[in-house]
Amino acid sequence: MTTRITTSRLGALALAAVSLSACGTTKVIGTYERAIDQAFQELETRSQRAPASASQPDRLAGFRKLRGRTEMIVFPKISNQGSKTEVEPFQAFASPVRFAITAQRLLNCQKLLQEKTDKWAHREHFPSDIHSSLDCGIFELSQVAPEIKAGNRRFGDPVAARLYLDSNYHPYGVDMELYESRGETATTSMKWNPVEASSSGLTLFPMDIPNLDAHSASIGGLPVPADAYVRNKMRKFGAASCKDARRYQYRDLYGNTTVVGWCDGASWPTTIENSRFFAITVRK
Image 1 (cartoon, rainbow, N blue to C red):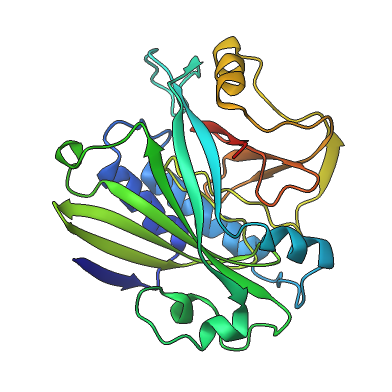
Image 2 (cartoon, one colour):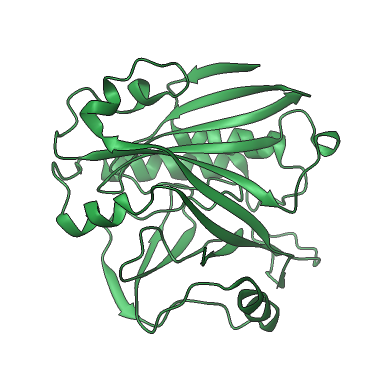
């Protein structure tokens, strides 16, 4: 049974709260209050921007390739070194976690809005006047390896995330499905400001996507850590690669630096790196 809890508060606030209560094995860098202050400051300074009204042809074509399933491996960043400062010194990467990104729905936005089902929060997130040329997608992110047994889940653990995107890659909302007990979950639904980049918050879900209209990109090699362990695992899992990629570097709602590498022709970011993890798309 799934219980839906709808909240109109800032997505960053809710994602932080979910992470602090649910991710007992994840070390949160900095304080919750500071993260929220930074999130609201970022929104204050950028609130005048508006998303483009129509999608560019190359984006629409790429977006439609997301039908089906995309996979990423996520390397959590770890440190065993104590520190009295707010930012812990980074030392190494933990064992990779494999996530599946599955398109639950992907079609013209106006047609999606006409679907009268309570399975998704599409009519809560996508505005009724969204441009008729845009496609909209509902993408579910879930951990597929290592498999988490039901007996190992604790109350409040995140089970899945659903990201609501249009074909300009603007986010409109995030649903976080949280474990309550065997066979029961609760879903927290969070509206997102579409002029902002989507963010993983303080979780490991690889859904950091830059605002392609607002964030400038540089061209260069795919930004991959030089860490030998990461490189070996990438070869083992068949990680995607390219000679030149678009590189987006920006600050997320928490004020942390995020670096996204995007290979030409890719429908999802090829690499994502922030203060908590490095992630890379793997071939199907």
